[in-house]
Length: 299
Image (tube, rainbow, N blue to C red; front, side):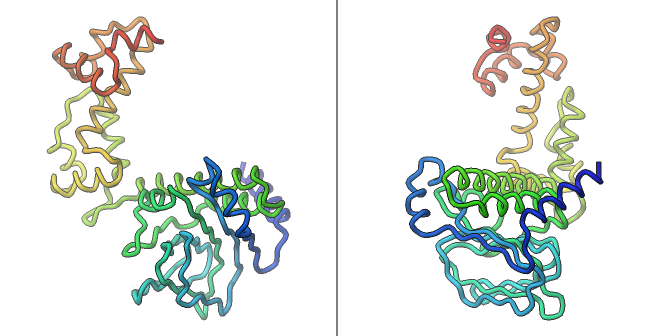
């Protein structure tokens, strides 16, 4: 399997066929035209490229309309946003927000190899917010990630054949794939300050105890956090409070169980820790929008 992956990677590099720098910039007239497109107006990739061992590479006090994310795959460099400076290391992805002065450059001794993506649209800010990337916190550490690298190369392979609408749609779909995958990484690596417990591990703990009635105290203790800190971290990463998420996992499991016609509706709630069948039915309807019996009839 590893040999197959290496072969595919080699073919991608051969198809890109570049030495030092490769860049594909979407012309302004195409950006203006496609910004009216119902799909691309939400998110449109405007510039993508890669730069290998970029000795002497510097950008000073640039202000762009686009959102920019850059992935350092080797070496290192630095980033400045309004006079605040960060060191960039191999495996870092960093954000240059739109309409904010930014500067960055390659390290003098070990210059970076980087991939960059520029994009705009109604959903651009929503995606960076989802990743937790802000002007104050512009770096996401993902280390060496073959999937992200492969998707970046896919974008360049598509764009080198031209700026047709189908190419822009395909390259933007790869961009969305990158952003949503980064979100899953940021969630699974959401470490608290006091230890190595992640939100993802707490969710796994919930699933392992789906038939139990876990309390907030038990979950926060498992996460080695105060209840306040735990609730804040969990909601930041998932959009839900811990107990709300646990109930939704139970209802998700209930849907799975209701798909088995040999399981009585009344026993589904009991199995999932609901001693009162009416409370289970009301909870299911509140979360799923249908009663358990109605849900089963629709299957």
